[in-house]
Length: 166
Image (cartoon, rainbow, N blue to C red; front, side):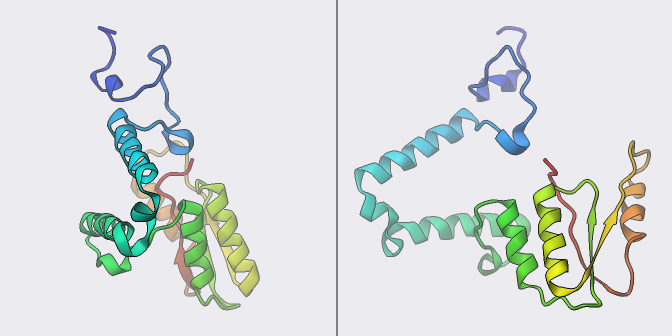
């Protein structure tokens, strides 16, 4: 692998392919896999000690919550764990008191499960779902902002823009 990219060695991916689908079925770096194995081994050695919230699980989760809070400049008590992006979006959407006159804006580049969740929340409350059409190809970054802002009205209560769409 003398011609390989230097970062290729951080993954166990087949060196004959260029793997680009890290969004939905991404591989973990080897160092992450090792830490996962260490956690699995600790769990198997002493399951009650490892998983009992009052013993060692809560401090582990608190450490991660604090690390994420530092990264996003938030209070750690405002950081919550969810299984995946769809669960997180659903938790937020279903907690909002949307009304019949409200509008929710999504983009046509949104992750389908999240846009469907927004559509469902709007339908359940009688709100309107508006979809901003993102131009392609994008010539200027302001085109995205302008396309989204064009969908805003006085009734807009929520904007959902996906960071990763697939």
